[in-house]
Length: 219
Ligand code: SF4
Image (cartoon, rainbow, N blue to C red; front, side, top):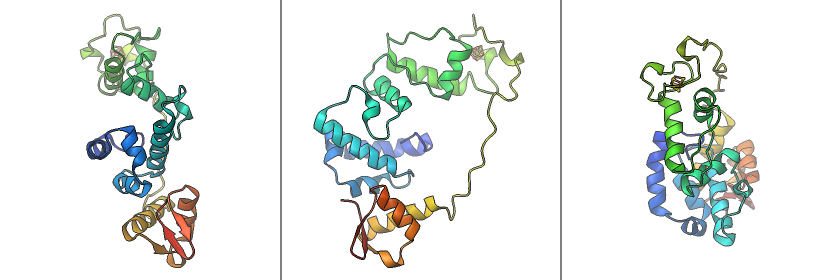
């Protein structure tokens, strides 16, 4: 949920989600339209579809040894699941953790003692203390022995320039979201009056179904 959505927004929904589907098996048994309804507001509904497909695969065959075999799971998410869900000594390396390792622990970190806590700590440390542009070296709890030159090191250019996001209003993404909400709310929508590009994309992604002259929720 938090991969492309602000963590504050994802956290609230996560609580509701986990009350509804506390296990992989319960999520696997849920109809996809119900899953898509509860995902609404988080954006990128393909992630909900992938999560649901993944839950069905795990419920049927167990966890694969290579988690990237699950839909929508790349190397980072696979490492995050192994660290935070299975508590294996695998470090999910996001941009914050990568920076902390590069500056403070170039030889790596042994997380075997408490992988979950170590992963959480390194992520938060990179976000709050060993920040990209203004690291708080003066109050850093692990400053002793830090090989990084500190705030005197040039920081200009350490962060790539932000790419301008195209406006969301009127975008295909917005139109897809609107059509999907409409179909999920109404149960079916006449294809003739619907946004053709949005409908085609949603059907191709398995998020809508077409039957005769109607657009329907996915089976
Ligand atoms: S001393 Fe500065 S650069 Fe080194 S780990 Fe702490 S915050 Fe990061």
